[in-house]
Length: 140
Length: 417
Image (tube, rainbow over all chains, first blue to last red; front, top):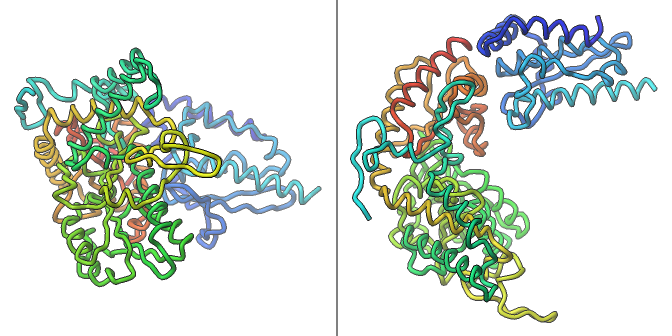
């Protein structure tokens, strides 16, 4: 499945959640279900700074593909970063660098990308791209 | 001036109408829900009178002040100086020229930190602040202490969020050159014993700056009664426009301090060799100020004066106590800041729920609160919490709004926990 196919799948899933409360319940439930990062990676090195909620992002490269795990101390942030990881994890650095992340907007959560939200989602997206760029240039 | 108020229990009634009717921004829906605005410590909404005054200014006397010989400039200058007189009366300053217009509280503190610092701080000296200061009363002092080789020291507080006065006296040694404290904590709501602090500091001839940003809109502040040396506050937290603030300073201090910024208006004469500075207050008002905001701040002061600060204080105290009581019924809620004397803001955390998450869900229910560290990171570090959820009140809030908030908070917690 391509990055865009994954995004489209999420968009479709959210189409059934018309009320904001359903959307948030979906995000919160998905966040509650999985501890998505190993505690040993919850270090300052992987912390995305300047956010109200703390977000950790840990990248790994295996067989030419980048895998991300992430976590947050706030559950809504955790759910949101989990969605982003679901979409962008497991692709080559070049694919991630080129990816146009549109699903957040389409599922009606674009307000979480506003800098005033300071929930780490925007910084995390930037950080994911930076890691992908870095891996990309390493390869080259 | 007409008298005045007849308070019902649930809302502030002024001349037979809820005062909130004068605030158009309060009468809107967000996400389809009626707005409950509980972020007043950050900024207050504006009454019609202020909004209309802003339009009126630009529709009539808009011009630059203190310069033109023409009619509009004279009118604008007069209106600008009328506000200065009103501010002086509002805080009972002995002289209007002791009132300096700034961009806001932060600007006022930076002005004093910088000018006082260059004149009076030397290596080995100390600036004393408190453990509950807003970043704006920490960082300017840190910067000037760094430049001058001085040390920043902090009056500690207890678990309730009250300053330790014996520690204050212990810290107040011969090295302390100035004390800068907040009257009311923006994150804890603590009302500090500033009169006592000033008395103790003055006994050692140490001047005191008061941050009144969270005080002047809630209670009567009298600079002569307090005998403070400097006092700063913002217009936008007291129903006025943004971009205008006040620095009050005792004449003797303001005359001793050098200018802060150079430019137009602050000079008497300029040659390439030497500049003769203007008298107070203009010495500290370089460049074209926020004329519109200064002029319409007067309307905000009129609004407060007409209602009466003692009425505002009484009503807001009732709201505050009501909110505390309702919160006490919700399991898991912990109030951060339990000082005996509090005002304005209530900070809370809930076991098992991050304040950010609660804030996001409350927002969706139409309730504007603040979450995070409220520009007081050291306070959060002291309580070992990442942040709080803060509600803060103004005269237009109602008990019904607190009820809506409580119901919504419960709903958010059901979703989150």
